[in-house]
Image (tube, rainbow, N blue to C red; front, side, top):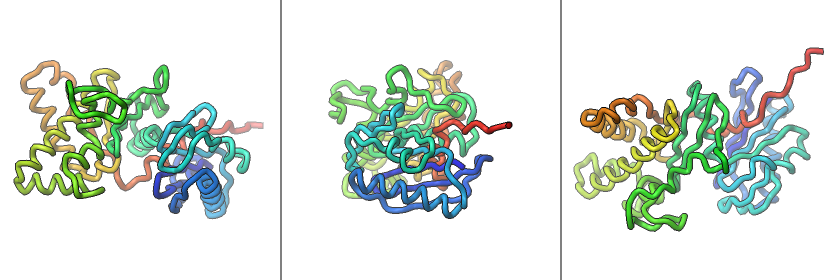
Length: 301
């Protein structure tokens, strides 16, 4: 059995996956703060799934929102969890006896999207959360690049002398198409800024239309960059703002279709058919975490 955990700032979402690849159980509990609480709750969730499924985990994968050393399993920095230089992977492995891998949450969501949507070949998962970043997967295996920065499209500057970005540059894509960008451009709505913005734009508010179109244009640029530079077969849009669903996807595709009518190169990319919305009813990050580790060898003796 595989177990995958998505450890977020507010909850741990965990799944047990059978050898056939089916999710057989799921547990969600609140996340604590600090290394002791996070490690204890991770172990409690693992034990709960093992008891509920009457199975023992062979592999455990963990997704964490922060800077992770995937080779050692150390969480270097995860501000929302209160973690800094924590040996999360080794601690969980020592307590459970399972093979444990730890990875950034966007990367495990990319693996989960590939698994849930049955995507083979190269594809990208573009996460629109507080920030904007992508995970790249080739034949259901992560591709991190030479230095682990593959998919960091949010920090590509696209507007000369644009808004300051948290990375220290100006005019990055993240300042146009992210949850934090919407919070600045359409303030006062908290976590529902995206829905509030689209509702106001649909009602004809010209200010909302301008903000929405700028956001959609930035998102489309991120998709275009991923396709042109990495030539991925598909880009799956996920994250909190993916709940906008078809309302968002239709506008992105309309922009691609308009460009294709005037540019033979844009038409050759066939971008409209290559962009999709992630299924919001599936635990993608937890599912992807479950598939971080290779399947254990089966003895034929």
